[in-house]
Image 1 (cartoon, rainbow, N blue to C red):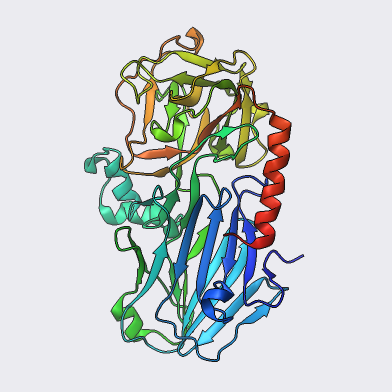
Image 2: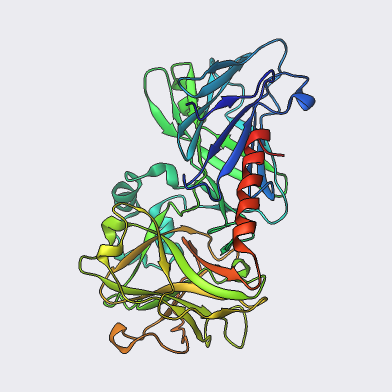
Length: 437
């Protein structure tokens, strides 16, 4: 069955993309609403999450639609529209990614394309470093530790160059109350840096810039490359709708002194009702985890100063986990607080993390915020053998530049969880059928 479905008697197409577990998925509406487009397919992408609480609309206003009609290929899960020199093609690449191709049949007058955005207050757009060299400097790394910028770029940018200069988009809420919305990490999507390919197969990466105040997205291509290109050319900005970070991993272990680590110290972690902690979930980079590893999941509350785990009390923790509990491949891992499950108090912030035994014990995916929203990694250097400290004592060396793929779950006091869960899934089904707002 195609994941891209045409709505009956309408020039609208819907898809549901995400982690594939039915939670925090994005409902996509492609082509615009017939009521707004007079029944014509328009180069408009509208994505919604959490029952329309958060959304992102991407529209190309310079494409003028006359009598053109879209072409839908159900088997290849794509729909495209050609209007003048531009073709807009939307294709479901996999269960989590939409491939959006803009094809130019001839050299454009300008070296950039501008799209209009619409989104609610509370959406954060974080541009990732332009190179791994910039990322290293953001962490406080010394230039002297690397020979030259060129050597650094050669070593790292060949890995996944589409991630450098891309954007990650996060909603203002996170975590999960059982029976209610699962915001997970609060991640809405990521927009990769576009690759541009000409008719001879020559490639270059474009620049991607989002102006939050003007609500615009601009893709810019080197004028020199455009002058020499063989047309048509294809601009390819993939958009992913997973909840996990996708830029790198942070290692929690003994030798590198990240022994107790908690993450994402911002307003996303504030509990909104009373209840009991049940588990912590994290997206693990399995290939980077150490063999024969030992670790525990933990949850600390905020300290007396507020908005920080420093001085906070140990709330919940798991029994000891080993590498046998890790997922078989990179993916989500949920660890129950099966040793001690503490009480959750509305209005208090809680910070989930790990206590680890050996170097690079647990490798967890993250993305970069540059401290723009106060997200950070806090560390306590208490050794694993000594057990989890009753009070978190930050060593002051945590980075203020990451949002880590970790969130906690708790049961709400007095809530009929089964009833709430049934209502949630029924509502999600209705949202899919109507294709968003």
